[in-house]
Image (cartoon, rainbow, N blue to C red; front, side, top):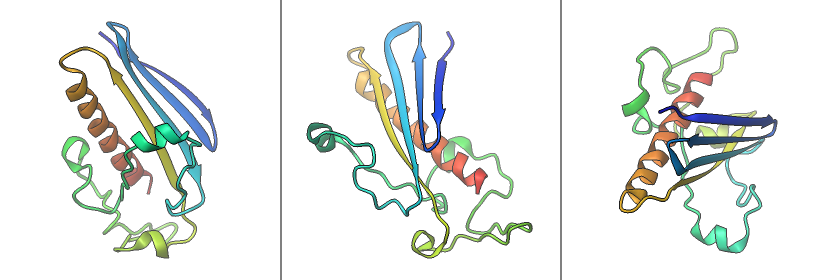
Length: 144
């Protein structure tokens, strides 16, 4: 049983679709829009009013110690709170860095997960959302 990933990358927008052929009703769609701001754009994905009402916004801070460490921590020196780049002089990221650091880029991620199999649907979708959150945080920590 293998996950199938399709990625459509056209900066500043990317779309990733993950399916599992064994389960026809399993699908994760991640739409990303990159913007030169601090995460303050409200509806960057252009969602309609009904979808906006259902949307759950989560702000992910790559410098927050409590976010994302459980599932993907490989050790090493990828902690933005303590790392300073020898090459660029960038870092460390101190509290409130989002308003102080320039230039800054925000990756707005819209995650839609579908696992329409009763009674497991809600639990599996919740797991998928937490898994993606860990991927986003740790991937961006490593890019910093």
